[in-house]
Image (cartoon, rainbow, N blue to C red; front, side, top):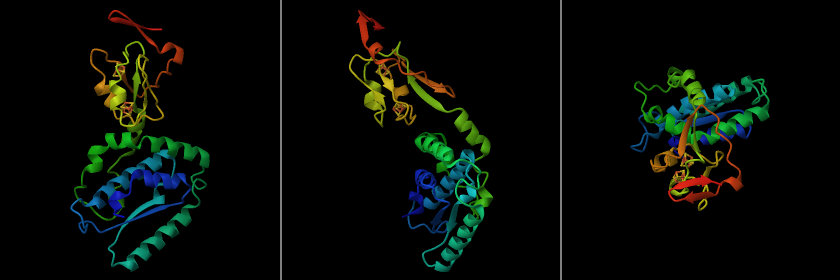
Length: 242
Ligand code: SF4
Ligand code: SF4
C-alpha cells in the first residue's frame, strides 16, 4: 500500500488497540511512482499525528516514518531494528507515559471521532508540500506547533439546532453527509453530536429565513429538547414548539 494511503485514523487506531509503536515505511522523496507524491502527504500526516499523540499524553517517538526503496532491504532491516530498539527503551504503551490505559483510550477515541474535523481545520498545511523537505523528520518537527493543537481543541466547533427557530423543513438532514440529524416531519430537528463530524454543511444549508443552525465555538452544546416537546405547531405563519 502506498504510504500516502496511511490515514491518521489507521495510526491512532493502532495505538487504541494497544500497539507499542507504529512504523511507516515510504518510498524516498521524489521517487514516488505516482504523480501524487503521496509520501509528502504522509510526512505531513505523521508530523500532525505526533503532535496529536503528544496532546493525548502518548510519547510521539512511538510513531516513526522512514524512507527506503524496494531494493533497499538492508536499509529496511536497519530502520526496523533501530525503531524496535527505541520502542523497547520507551517501554510498554501507557506504562512508560505513567497514565492509565483506559484514560488514554478514551482520549484516543475522542480524537479519532474528530479526525474529519481536524482534517478540515488543518487542510491547508496537510495538503501543502514542505518547502525544503528532508527525510530526517526531526528537522520538520515544528511544522505543526503545540500551540496550534491546543487552539484546535480549545476552539472546537459544534453545531446545534435552536428548537425555537427550527421549522422542520428537513433541508439540513438531506444534506448531512453522515446522517447525524434526527429528522422527522413537523418535529424540531436534533443533531446527534456523537455522529456529527462538524463539517458545517447544515449551517450553510439551513435557509437564512430560519437561521436555526447555530455554530458554537469552544462552548458546550445544550442538551436536546425532550421528545414530547419537539412537535412544531404552526399558527398561520407563526409556530410554537408544543
Ligand atoms: S455539521 Fe455536518 S455532520 Fe454535523 S450535523 Fe451538520 S451536516 Fe451533519
Ligand atoms: S434546515 Fe434549519 S429549519 Fe430546516 S430542519 Fe434543518 S435546522 Fe430546521
